[in-house]
Image (cartoon, rainbow, N blue to C red):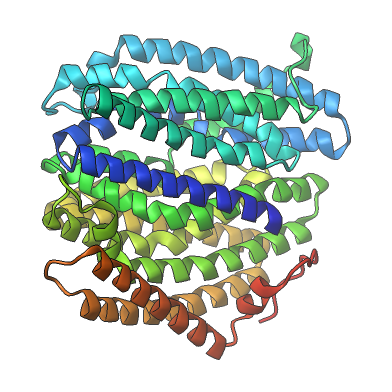
Length: 513
């Protein structure tokens, strides 16, 4: 599981770096303005199509079905299951894409009633809609590979997707000048190649593949039983980015500011939290298929503890280096000093959610592995419903900073709700072990983040700065945060330090206290 996590984490890190390159290009060529907002608005309706089909959860839904057959060594049954689900989802996503393409105009009017350029946003939305077909079907192809514990081809998908967006933006800038259209064309091509074409090749190599099947062989009914909760319920984790686009319409550039800060924050979230969840899930699904509750609880606890420990370090780092990081990455041409101050402030708030993302990614997959889809969905839907008035209230109270606060509170609440449900399912022993890790890591992270931020402010200051000043700030902040965090956790004898240093140990016993 650790090796799988490294592969996925490395992929996500490279993808996030490319994503930062994409955002740097957007900031430089387009800036934080209505053009940048239109680019982000264009993804709203296509993303809703993805959520409607539980696209973000397709791998989670399919892996337990395939794992059950593969645990018995029945690859033919696994192929029949995959074929029936793939065929059903393909019909559904293609049909819904056509419907949304036809009704893009009314949908844009409904979601963005005050947008400055309605017709252009409709055109941009229709342009990027086909990418969702490749993304959704590619998720099923990735699920096959994950079930066989093959992570390399799926790891390449986000890299190629981001390369496509960057390439499209650059080609468009050379041919006709910077525009959202060029970046969106790149997204469509990148999804077709990386998320679908490459995954088609990878899935075929597993031995679980498309087969002629009879109606009685179909697993669609069973798939829908598992997927329906994820389609009906909507988690704050899935809708957080949509809230940025929807509620960020309060002023020009607000959506861009929030998006820049959120995307920076999603780098450690992806590399740590999402990578841990993706890598752990096939192993958790196999343990659940065997009925090994003790092994499932033990493995979940171990994965969650290490994830939280690293996530708190990452949160402290982002708080400390927010200003020099944003300056170094974005403050060129159309992106001003004012934009830097606003985005850095938002990033400092968003960073507080990183540990909660880590807890959520692991504990949700514990329930998914047991095929108990409704529980995480009900908890997630409840916090999503609570998040809507929270976003409105804090937006009216504190503007864009209030929206970042609402996001942090909603994600943290969801993680706490999942943790309570997990504790009731597994018992006090595992919950106490995880809670001690959370307490130690948060204390160390607070000390490291505050001291690092203070030193960075002293080094960088508030006046005009050079690239060298920003690099110095990043170095001072990074060294300070890592040094303080490791010192404090060592003084508290955190067992995670010893665990991370271990190599080649397949023993999944609980960590010592």
